Image (cartoon, rainbow, N blue to C red):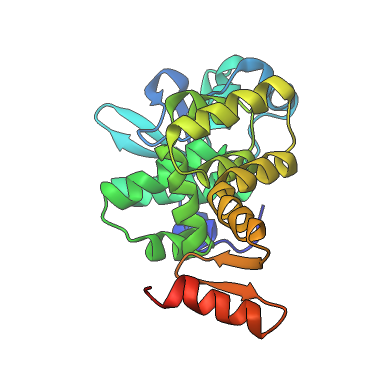
Length: 264
């Protein structure tokens, strides 16, 4: 868990070792405002529940004051598992943390443990961007990712709701989502999505089909040139591209010039 990730959880919680651990009543602790995981079930926590029953909570959770209660900032799984294990009190470290820092800590903690699904990550990045005004570059630095990785993750939220739900439920992966995003519109995306679910397609196969759909227009142009007896190579990039027309002799060359470059 201690791998370097942006600022790192240690940096975000600097000075925490010097603070005293307090045992707080379970009923005084509430889930965090920026709890990122959308689905936590007792079955997914069973191993942690069993460990807490046997050894108690080894690592205190981080909370911040919230009215008469305390809001979880770091350690939601331990909090839920402790409740399921029947603990009456939970060891906590109380810190004064603002909303922006609370969200940063929640993101870094979960990314370090690789607990978030792609949709949860996208929602967290969107909150940092829209609520707190962080650029994609700034978010990238905080969580130890590239700017393009942040941008691509955020694009998941532009997909149709049915696809987003499938990603969140683990029915399809982030790789599948990336392939779907390469298509031109939601109609094409939903068409491939349903085929993908029906046939239980791999990411690689989904990518191949998406690429074929994207290149349909290019293939059509290439076929028209082939009908005229020419081989053409067309390459489209994010910005620009090129068209190469191959010819056998001067006769072909003159035909191309007259056909495409000279108005007659």
